[in-house]
Image (cartoon, rainbow, N blue to C red; front, side):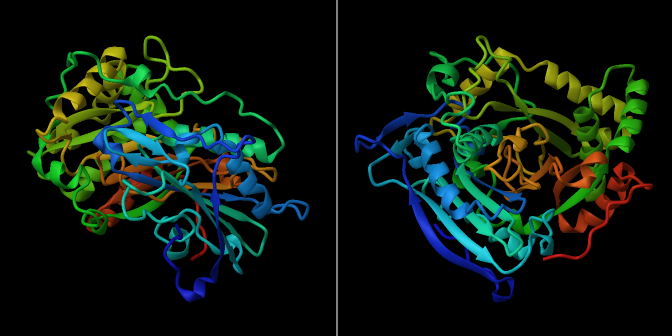
Length: 462
C-alpha cells in the first residue's frame, strides 16, 4: 500500500512496490489463524495502526539497500509469520496464501540533512512511511517503505497493526531482519507467539485490583473507539519536539527527590513535570479530574515471566488521577511520589485483573476507557534501536508518526538521539502532543528542562 503522494517540490518518487512473503523451500505457505492475547485485544491497541520512521546513515557503494532490504525482510517474515497476515474477527490474525507484506521502494533528490527529522508534522516526513490505510481490519498487518536519498541516507517507514506488537516487539522483528541483512542466519532470540497461553483471560475472569477511579464504560467509545471519530482528535492537537538536557533534568530531579525524601527515578520526575506543565498550559478547571497514563513493561513481573522471544504487547497502562487544582497546587515531589507508588502496585495480579476487566466488559456493554484528555507517556530510550543495523549503521533518528497511544490523543514520547548525533552527549528528546492554543504556555514550562549553556537549535528544514 503506497503512502499518499507528497507535494511535487518534495521530489519523492515511488519506484516500485515489492510484495513480500516468507520464503519456503518446499513451496508450502504458512497459513493459519493465530489467537491474540488479552493485552493485544485491548481496544486501546486493537483498532490502532502504529507508524514509525527510522533514518539510517549513508550506505556504502558496495551495498544496495533496495537489494538488501527485501531479502532481509522476507527472511524475517519466515519467523514472524503473523505479520504477513491480517487482523480477523474474534481476536485473531489470519494468514492465507494470498497475503503479502507491501514494501514500497522510493527515492528523493533531497539529502537527509534537508529534512527536519525531529518533526512528525513535516509534509515530506509524513510521506516516508506507509499511511494508515482504510483501517486495521482487512488491511495488511504490516507495511514498509524504504526511501533512498541523494546523500545515500535511507529512511525506513513502518506501519504495523498495534494488536500484533508494541514498540519492543516491532524492534525484535526489525532486529531480526537486520541480522539477516548482515549475513547472520537467525535472530538473537527465537520469536515466541503463545499469546493466549501467556496473557489470555482467566476462567472465570475476575477483577481484584480497583480500576474504577480511572476506567469506566463509555458508550461513545463503543461507537467510535477510545480515540473518537477518525480525524476529530488529530485536528485538535499539535506535536512539537523539545530538546532536554540531562544535566538540567538531573539537577531538578535530585532537588525534588530530596524534597520528597525518596529515591526518584528520572521517568517519574519527568512524567510529573510534563503532566503538570500540560494541565497548566491548557488552563484546565481546578475541579476537573485529570489523568495521566504511562506504559509499563510487565515481561519480568509476571509469574512465570514472559520468555525473551515473546513479541506481543508486553506493556499495561498504569493510571494516576487528580483534580487539576490538586496537580497544579501540590509540590511536584508529591505527584512524582504518586507515580512511583502506582508503578510499585503493578504485579501479576494487576495484569491479570486488567485483562479480565476487558474480557468482562467486551460483551456488548461498551468499551472501558479512561475518557478524553488523558496525558499519555512512553519511554523509547531503551528499546534497542541500535540493534537495527542493516549493514551500514544504526539509525541516526527514530520518530513515531502516530498520535493515538494508550487510549490518549495527547501522547508524550521520550526519544534517544542517534549514535551519530552529537546532541546524544547532552540529553534526549521529548516529543509532546498538546492543543495548539496551549502550545505557547507549554513551551515556556518546558524551558526549565532545557540547558541554557548548551542550547539546541536547528535550521529550518522541510
